[in-house]
Image 1 (cartoon, rainbow, N blue to C red):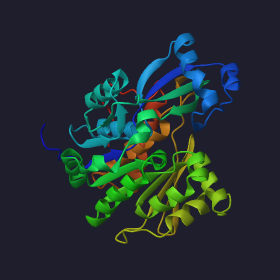
Image 2: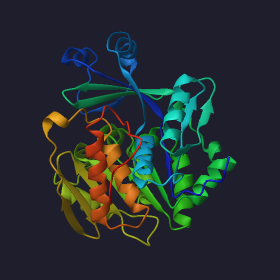
Image 3: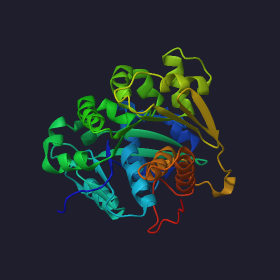
Length: 342
């Protein structure tokens, strides 16, 4: 295998999305709310079999960080620029994930857990909105030892930007800190995502360990509101963004930038005590397929320009383009050619 000389790396939970349109009755039966992302409990386990047996689902490569890296690679339109690490099982689902990410041009360096199945995420779609119920399985078993492999060292050494979604905080904070320290030491850029209100609420200590590494912090409006509530920062998202931007950070060579998306409402960017808003181009309702992966695609688009040192307006514009493309697809499915023009 040739040496990785790309600029972007991600580390996270590789999951196979099992995506289907369902009725309100299905959501009620399993006590799942639209626009939520949760970890499966015992009561949710029968959901997967019912989905597969009765709803003709699509199987789509998923996992928040892997999605973002795939979109970024696609929009960079230059092969071999990105790599992703996470833990999968030794099964057909893992092969499907690897084939999909590789065909999108991403180098995947998976840790393989022979004893545990590859993680899955039930993407329940109703009227274009989505609810995500995740069985982490093998994704939960990523270990810092994987970072000692030659290929992992090569990836971390080459990457100028590292992106990790908050979902990984439930898995291996130790791995995040190890990579974060290396990125800081070489003045690289570390990007983090709040990812879901439950991460903010129940993994606050882990988030507090990760936050000092974040040069860029992403989140959507519900995650931002949850963070504001948890840390008594009020309800104004702009004020919350400014407060998070001002939190202590490891790398003092650049200020932290906080980016909060709000669906079809304008995107908020806070940095250096200033807030800028970027309007989102409206999409006709009939063109919306589902919102699953929209936030991941926004980050992917943003990163595709950040690697080239583009300004904030260009990064956000690319983020909006990526999200707009993905909400017109079922899940994070990419066409062979990308017609994005920076």
